[in-house]
Image (cartoon, rainbow, N blue to C red):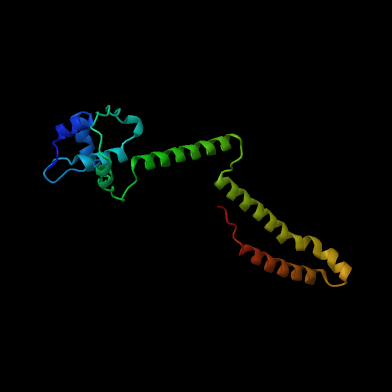
Length: 181
């Protein structure tokens, strides 16, 4: 049988309301009868409470010195591990601080114009690719006459050949997909 909520609050040096809130939030375990095992609750309280909000530790009481033989025979008390289902408060606080630092770094990069908007970049690449495609599609009609005269063949035949080869090449290029990470 453990301590009552008020007795544990006195043991911990906090108000009973704090203990009630911690028990309700699941930060400290309660026994089936509603009492609190001080060893388990102390371990859970220490692991899941913000160090900045912890109450100052009570002054240690003067205890009788333990003879060396008894000290060697006594083993340190085993603390029960917390469930591995969630992070403790310090891990959560660390993750939060890292996320805030990353967000601040990105905001500074945006202010310095070192970061580009992904949607704008995709739109610009699409626009440039379309302009290049259009230039290649109209190229055979512009140069077919000159090339036909140099080669000594009919201009229409030269234009049809050039258009077929340019379109085949553009179809190959259309299969390329840019990856933006």
